[in-house]
Amino acid sequence: YEVDAFIAYRISNPRVFRAAVSGSIELAEQRLRTRLDAALRRVYGLRDFEAALSEERAVMMREVRDQLRPDATSLGLEIEDVRIRRTDLTAEVSQQTFDRMKAERLAEAERLRARGNEAAQRIKARADREVVEIVAEAQKESEILRGEGEAQRSATFASAYQRDPAFFEFYRSMNAYGTALDNTGTTMVLSPESEFFRYFRDPNSTETPAKPTAPATPPAQPGTGQ
Image (cartoon, rainbow, N blue to C red; front, side, top):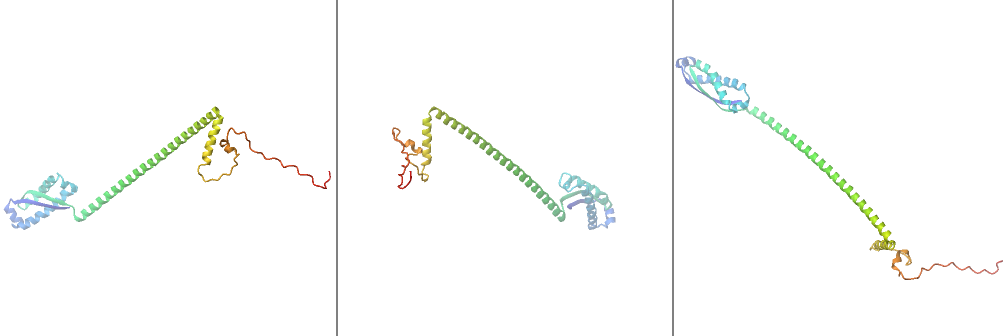
C-alpha cells in the first residue's frame, strides 16, 4: 500500500532528547518515520485494504499511535496523535486489481449474454412450436368443416334429386353449361342433336333425330350364275 500519514508529537523530556539524538529534530523525525513505517506495516498487515477506507480507520490510527509511544519515549518525545490521510494501492497492484475486475466483469457479461441467448432460443422454440400447433389445429378444423360442408352438400343434392329428379338434372346441366362456356377459349365440336344440348331444344317438338339407313342391296352383275 501507499499510505500518507503524519505524527503530532512534542518533546516531553529535553534531557533524554538531547542524549538520544543530540538535540537534532531532523534525526528524531528520521527515527520516528522509520518506526512509523514499521507500525503501519504491522497494523495494515492484519487487515484488508478496505479496512482503511471504513470506520475501522480510527482504530488503526490509535493502534499505530500506541505502538509508537514506547519508541518515542526513548527519544524524549511524546506522541500526541497519528493521522492517516490517504491509503492507495501501488501502481502495479492498482493495475492488477483493475485487470482482475475487468476480467470478472467481462466474464459476468458473457454469462449474462449466454443466459440471454439461451432464454431467447427457448422463447423462439416455444413460439415456433405454438405456431405449428395453431396451424395444425386450424388445418384440422378446416378439414372437418370442409368434410361437413361436402356431406351437407351431398345430402342436399340427394334430397333435391329425390324430390324432383327432372329439376335436379336440369340444374346439373345448367352448371355444366356454365363450366363449359365460361370463356375458357376451348373449342368444342358437338352435334346439335347431342344430349348435351337437350335443354336448348323445343320441349314441344316431336321431331326425332334422323337415323342413318342401311345402303340398298346392289343389283346383280350380268354374267353371274344363279
